[in-house]
Length: 472
Image (cartoon, rainbow, N blue to C red; front, side, top):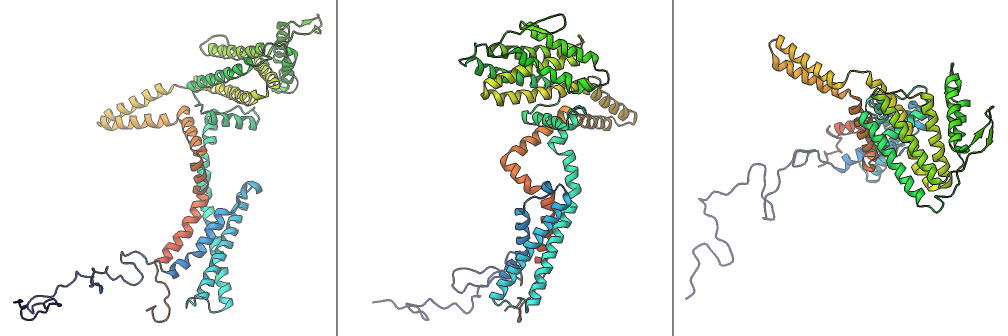
């Protein structure tokens, strides 16, 4: 016998709920999903998403088109300031690009509104043209204003955070140098990562020796290494430029230095077999040198020149400036003659020459620093003074803290620390990703963008015009 279902039930229908059982209600803010699968998210207030964030409707997305157009135009605009030679020209060009881009974005926005029959679309051609012109002027004004705000920021950054400026302030290349030569020395120091210090000078010498070793390997392995090809007279002629058209010849009292340079040339030619009469006329030319002999002479000249300088730093005999210049001119002449025979040495020769040029300014720096109080003594005085002052005031801990702060600040004023910072900044700038990013992160770009998008984001939080009927 088939059992009968309980009263009020059927086989294809769930039993009705008891009238005494309460009907479950969803949590506050939720409604039952009509599909029966689960609850809906809370209903949001008008103009916001369920999370409370602004609801990006099509109309709100359209309002950003002028800012998008102005941003794209200014980022893609060619940089005119270096070409025209003025900040004002670059700023006006940026403002014009922003105005054109903003106007184009506004026109695009109005076209979309018109095509979609948006009730917020302009009602006439005159209104549309006026809105386009108004938005273009606003975007251009924000660009110009932003760049004006950014200008002092970039000036300060270029003075204190530019690798070239940082390194150059510490190197202090001689004012007698051609500014282009001084700039090349700074570029060499940053590229080779040579800190401005006694240790940096030693590192520079090691770098020159390493390049000489590479050149030596290339020369000695060549088939013509032992063939007499280099004329010492061609090398000695490098001194003539020093005695005829250089600061050595143009100075007020030049007789002693010119005599030193001429004597250096005479000694060099006699060393290589040249014979002169009593009047100083050459009656027998010097013997030719092989490339190997020329290279060895060049390397030995630099090494001995550096040893003379180091001996003078320890209290030995001073090296005459004219003699030093003559020796380096002869060594440089030997290198140039080798490059004429071996073009593959040119890159190494240029690097070698740039390092030796930097060496001259590094020697001047070391001479200046030798006359300054050492940083170790300074730190001891600062730390001791701060501690004594704290003890006198009854707070030795505060005095010690002040002394340590003074030591830290004094260390930041050290040329080695500043030049190391410059080298680190230059290294970061050479990174392809950081370098590309820096182009778009400079204040003249970021400040106008912040003003432009700050305006748009702030405006997007305001209630937007609704079509008739509230958009319901």
